Image (cartoon, rainbow, N blue to C red; front, side, top):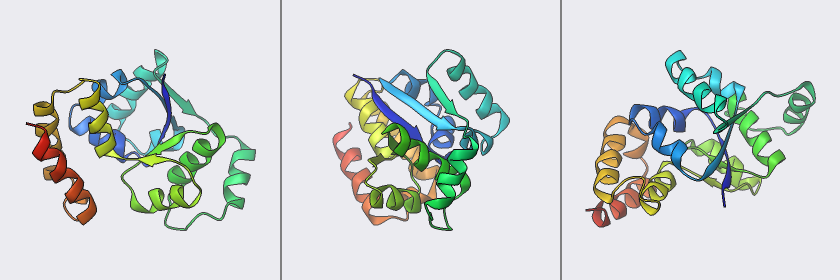
Length: 170
């Protein structure tokens, strides 16, 4: 059974792209959704790759309508959320999807709205569970992520979760 996912703030797509894991991600048994606002935050080469997945039905890109923007405005989201973040929370709530993000503000907002959320570590867990990556490959890529993205070095809880996996993925 596929899990519905809404992806936000482009950071997940960017990290997957930078790690060369976009194809692996789309090979997971996930129903992947995002919004056009997220797509517009990406570089053109990243957009092209995602549009290819959209063209074969592996990615659904939601274009918000006027009513959606009115509903978003009426939600009184924190000012620190980008329009793309708000659009993903809105769509996730609307289609009963979970949110994938590494953004703390967005994750807290999802939590407050009782929307399930996950991040890159969860994706790595899925890669290993489904044998999309071997534990050794996952360990190598996770180390690359930590080296290239300061977010994964400056958050004690994340550091602990990463260290747990690095110990068991040999």
